[in-house]
Amino acid sequence: MRYVTPSATKQCLRDTLDVIPLTGRLSGSVSALAETDVKSICDHATNKYHPDRTSWERAHIIDNSAHILLTIPLPLRVMGFLYSQLFKRLPYPTGSFAGKTIIITGSNVGLGKEAARHYVRLGASRMILAVRSLDKGQAAKQDIEASTSCADDVIQVWQIDMGSYDSVKQFASRVNTELDRVDIFIANAGIARFRYSTIGDNEAQITVNVVSTFLLAALVMPKLKETAAKYRTRPTLTITTSEVHGHTKFPQRLAPDGQIFATINDKATAEKYKMEMYPISKLLEIYGVRYIAEKHPASTFPVTVNCVNPGLCHSELSRDADSFMFNMVKFLLARSTEVGSRNLFHAGAMGADSHGQYVSDCKIGEPASVVTSKEGKKAQDRVIAELVKKLDAIQPGVWNNI
Image (cartoon, rainbow, N blue to C red; front, side, top):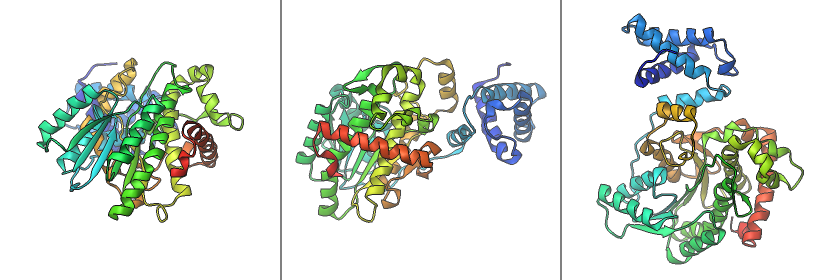
């Protein structure tokens, strides 16, 4: 492969993706196409959009872009991901949040912190940074205060450890007793692990991203409902999920009745599907959100519950990744943390039309077929039945809050 500057390659990828819908030549898997076919598409794009480049420069760009496209081992759905990352321009947050109380977990760094900054900039009366490390939370508070010039009493730092059910319960108790209202709750805290480990009674990502997240959602729901009734408003509960939920076929769905979580958590199974464990945790989040909306439609439920895909962003979530290809793709395609946070902001600010929906690129999107298919619906109902039992074992009757 020849070498050309990353910026030129990135631009050619943008141009290639723009031309692909016109050519109609990509179907199925990109990597299944002959190299000459992919190169011809890259050549088409380069000649169309870079007629002023020398033949030497165009050859370099074509080779680099074709190499990247050919090394993507995913179905054509990945092309939608690339289009989103390279073409979509997410709207900059606007509006007024005066009088609103907003809680964001995992907000000492990354997407949560930048979403908090937007809400504070737009006048939120109270922002709760829910974090595991109080020191890091205080640093985030000072940074946001410096950039927004908000009053000293707007931002509060509260501790929560999503790896501890007791910590989750203690945090929720504070929410329900110390706050007069909660208008937006963004459950953003999560982990991505690339080696098998456990927290509590599950594989680590399942405990933090799924069980603790829905435990927290159920525990704070009374305050959200109270806010709706008392202030004649419609609060929003948003869960941060991911595009990668579609990167698994969820083989554990075939487990015997009542054994899906046990199969997911089994060490041998988890290591066999280690690169799918994070996608599975994000998939289960979407299942939970859709299940809630199916059982409690927006017309009869006073709180909007949705989930949001921020896209591939520069953040600390993937700090444990040591894959050269992943880091290369991230370098070329990742959104800035601030741009990614716009998705969280918009999902939290959406109304009843987003109830039960998957928000992506600041609008309602369509999740993968592993969610929307008949098999996906069957898996969803089985997963949530098991999840409710797990939650009730942690806090009896907690699901009744929803």
